[in-house]
Length: 110
Ligand code: FES
Image (tube, rainbow, N blue to C red; front, side):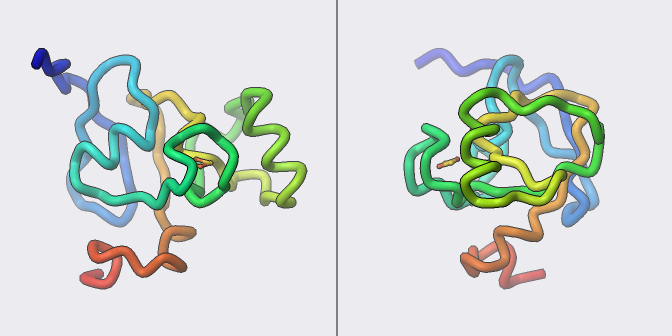
């Protein structure tokens, strides 16, 4: 199977090195493909709210309609975002703090 080259990277404050990703993938896909397991009960459809992360930069990135609905329904903080609805990009800087609640293995080791 053809694999996309991961020639971009983004910042996750819990990690000292930037996380590589392939063009066009979501933040959720980028993290999971690097074995940073983010909970995603609905498989990335934007309906469960379990893939939440904190977006530190850029501060003014618009939500798509799926994320807007979820953010309103679950009263998200302004910077609380769905990893499955964000397209990975070089200028993203995020925190995985909301994932602590799921006690992911990688977070337990921090
Ligand atoms: S994986 Fe379900 S909302 Fe993102």
